[in-house]
Length: 328
Image 1 (cartoon, one colour):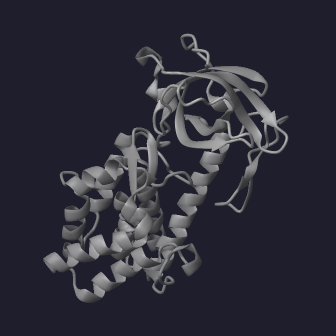
Image 2: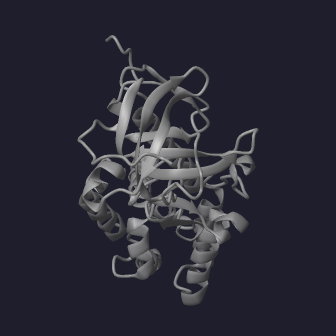
Image 3: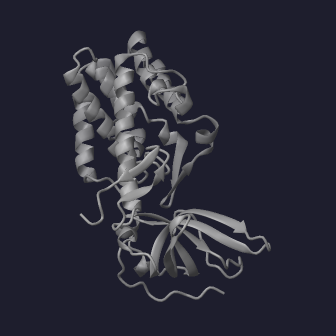
């Protein structure tokens, strides 16, 4: 039977921990995989996290009748050892799990969030929405993203992804505001870009994620519509339906706005059903990619130990990230 962990003591965040040190604290379960060894005995593979990053973990003794409830999105009290595996890198070898006491759960240490205060992001979103001069687009954006609408409230709180970038509460707000600011700056440099159209496309390009992802506790996962239909078709359908129900956006303008949503991943291999074919679609795709890439660097920096110069290889970057010499 796993040994119950004692009361949590103040310990450094994951990123600040050195290898070959004991772990005795409450961490968040991001992912959970129940497996069997060759002799059919069960074991657990987990991804554990605090706000500084994530780390894989394994519990080799995992008897279902003995272990406490371990659920994705929930905190768990564990003790074990942070090790450096020669093949897989940093991981925690867990020797015991226990239900955490409520006084031991510090959500400010467990859950990541935007780099800027959420209040500032909300002010930015309101200012961006207020800067739209086209009356039809302004009305459409208020119906979809107004602060007093159910969809607008969800948009301000939702994550932007399960893992790759901005994967935390208010992540969709942070990412969308970033893309909108970048697009607005691009329109100032390239006057041929229709700023209102590009700005609306920037704020709406990921709106399908509100239907494609769901948060359970602090865990983020795809919904059935997200798996079956995908975030881009879901966002396209939502915006098109809103346009058709009210009819205050001219058809040609509506078509160009919907094209931005459909094309924002940039190519068919990355999930876009069409390639960017307008200036506005091209600039939204470029700035969306830039924001996602910077978000991936932020995630990798949090996952990389402070004494390490290089991250692991990352599929988003298609490279490892360099964060400076450890002896600098």
